[in-house]
Image 1 (cartoon, protein in one colour):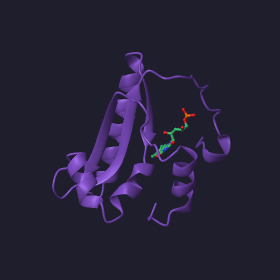
Image 2: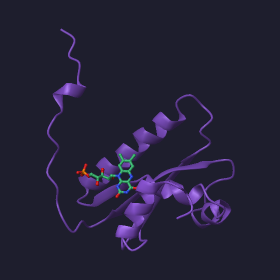
Image 3: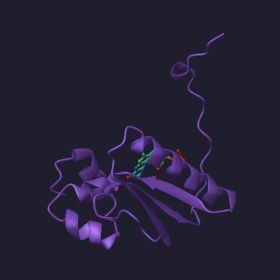
Length: 117
Ligand SMILES: Cc1cc2nc3c(=O)[nH]c(=O)nc-3n(C[C@H](O)[C@H](O)[C@H](O)COP(=O)(O)O)c2cc1C
């Protein structure tokens, strides 16, 4: 709530300050974020986790908004709570469980693709 991130604060308020709800499993991805490809590696691993969950009939949601918890004065408390290795930074979490709803695949946005012929 003290992050100054108005979008994150609005989302939190609209969800009664809850982020993870009742998901039975939360995977937290952290990294030293020192190497040029560290963030890319995290993104690849997160996507693999999501695809693996789906492949065994589970649902998931990527949660980047939790980062605001690591921006405030309680950063050490949350790092301890989520067992983030010393020197690592929180990147994102993936809540995994049995989904209450199903979504439809997104339409391909051709304006974001450059096709080289
Ligand atoms: C990097 C990243 C971070 C995200 N962080 C959050 C988050 O903190 N809270 C949230 O409700 N959705 C977050 N989302 C969005 C959801 O994971 C999901 O993509 C969104 O609900 C749309 O789902 P759909 O693509 O299956 O329609 C994030 C997505 C990405 C890619």
